[in-house]
Image (cartoon, rainbow, N blue to C red; front, side, top):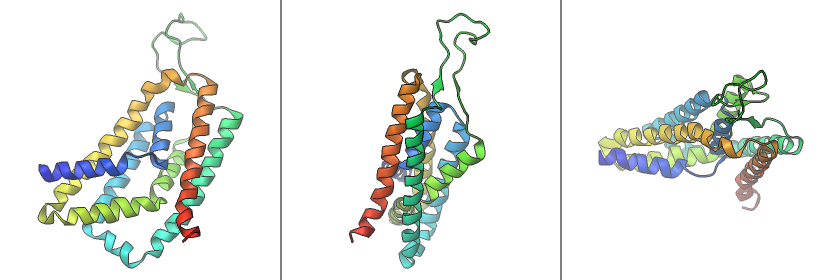
Length: 221
């Protein structure tokens, strides 16, 4: 049990950080759009990476460091591109959450009181999943942290390394579920187009900053 808890603690410490993947999951949760598929893709991807790291995939990265370099540049390009898309949304508006008015009486233009919120211009599932897959697998830090670091720590537990991996996988499912489905409780503060434009502006800044930060070590090394 202590080994599982150790994996759970390290897994959470690596996942709970402001990153492109978490920002995207948060936004999908706020929009209440394809939340379950996005959460599952993130958690299952983490599980694959964790299992790969414990099984020895970290050795491949150590012997072929150019794989991380490729992921670094590809990830930077994708993050900056996504940040520019978010900046465009912030500038032009659109995609805001339209919450029902609990005090309004039901009628042709209002759903029944207490009904669920809906979103404008819903994005199709396929592009959404493609985005979250890119944010996950084009992030070089996921290979350094989840595969190499977590795999190395798991190896120190010897025969119990798979119990350690189990704890880390549980941490991933816990975090992404809480982030994706818990975000909807913030909807009351994001009912106006202005609030969503501010959110998209923040997302743009974070994404572009993360993308630039990925290549700065290479440019100034």
